[in-house]
Picture 1: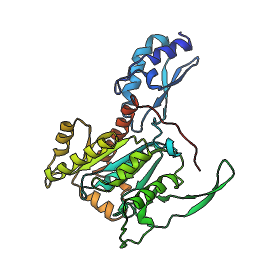
Picture 2: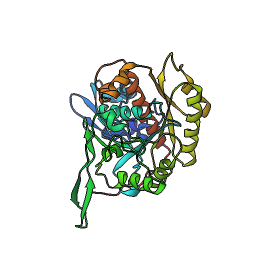
Picture 3: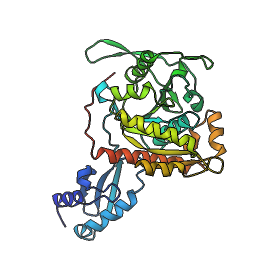
Length: 354
């Protein structure tokens, strides 16, 4: 039977069929254990919901059969999410920050942002949700929580005492929103500098802890928040949400243009409320025209509205329902697009923050 180094070299040279690169280049081979009764191959799964794991195992078995000398081959798969350390430059311990935006309001952007956060968490990732829609925060209602966050004193590495805002746990999901700080009927009337300060505080003074993904629900339209984020972070990318009709697609094109202008990669487009009323396929056609990925569609399903109105948006991905498969598929597609982008994107340094 071949020795360990031969095994490792062979495994590293196997081309992963989905991402199109060698396992060695992707750094997915953790090791191999050569026991008397079996061979155990340890591989990393680079993003949650890596549904091609079984086909990868079949491919690896085919490639290493001659090395195994008849011994059974088993696999030790471990989720090890890759990231560009989006918040490293400001001391934010987050591998990937994802902006969820739209060209206009009323297309379900916040619903997609919240279900994306819960869906990635359901698939095994550490996730946080930040509501950056300061003027019209709807995340507190969607997640069914509306409590005042507290600040706790922490000790910095230099011995100084610092205060950190604790995110609200909404069904186990760390969440922050301006809606936690103001009354539901209170209008927020701020100019740009105050908006910039609020976003900066949400990123730098909230005790997020280490996260694989931080989902940011953006305000609708093309405003100051995107510019602020582009200045503070190296985002993993943006998801653009729209409904199928042409009037919504016109504004979605503007959102794509805005993200590109501020150098935020566009991960792709999601079509919401797809069905008989608004039509179907408009976002997919527009994504093809703009040469960006189409991440999936959400049907015009009453259960989504009911869950959102009841503050139980999490159950859309945690319980069986007509929308669950579509939602989790979108989550997988977003995670996959980030993984693809990392193949050509430089990483940013990670700084410790309390």
